[in-house]
Amino acid sequence: MLRAFSTAATGMSAQQMMVDVTANNLANINTNGFKRSQIDFQDLLYVRMKEFGSEVAPGVTSPSGTEVGSGVRVAGTVKVFTGGELVNTSRDLDVAISGDGFLQVSMPDGSTRYTRDGSLQKGPNGELTTGSGYLINPAITIPTDAVGVTIGKNGSVNVMDSTGTLSVAGTLQIARFPNASGLSSEGDNLLAETEASGTPTLGQPGDSGYGTIQSGFLEKSNVQMVTELVNLITAQRAYEVCSRTIRAGDDMLRNAIQSAGA
Image (tube, rainbow, N blue to C red; front, side):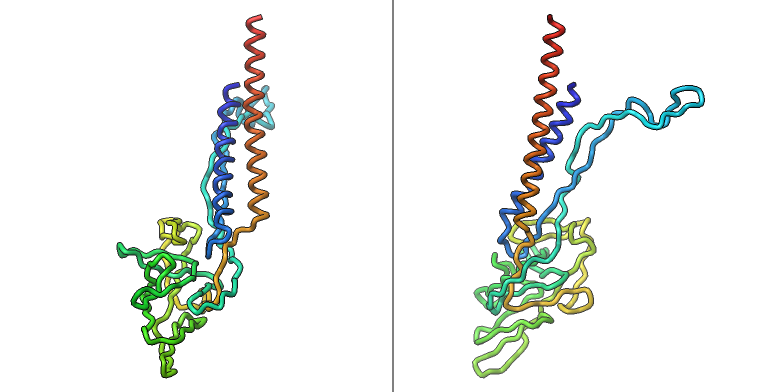
């Protein structure tokens, strides 16, 4: 009977984790470039009372066995990198990546992070940064006398001065990973390279396999509210069933004790 208690408890813990992941997805439904996470479960070890195919009589083999599982555990969370909706903002420095890839971001400690959030800003000296102030890599500086900025599909940042002369201030690069789902979330809409993600390869927007830059657009979250609400209801019901299993086991154990004491 105690096995039912521990087994149901693993189910309650797993469903609580699913609620936590779903809550984070819903909380970021309006976050630029956010990619939803889904949770994977695995069953735990089994207690085997009778081996499969064991001999039950001379020359007779059992077609089945007897085993009881120990519950469930969270195997991991996986980011889903389907594209989000592209929203027209008509802002010169807003960019969205249509296709595969990430913008590179330089951190103060010299490391590199990656993002799909294309809401670019100008720093105090005209340098392109993220909304949190981290520099875009490779560094691109908009001249102080620029009166207009356009960003092409190939990532070229074109500026126009007061005389109407066009020049290229720099070009955005895109990084791709063998396993983007292995990237680690670091907050601030930033992702970090890990052993699971593999080493990034760099390319220009529009190159084979790389996405293109859509200027004046932002990629919104790929979270679908209906899907997340269904997951939330499913997790809640599974949690309730597991808790009822514990109550049922408690009732059976109490009845057994009362019967033994009678």
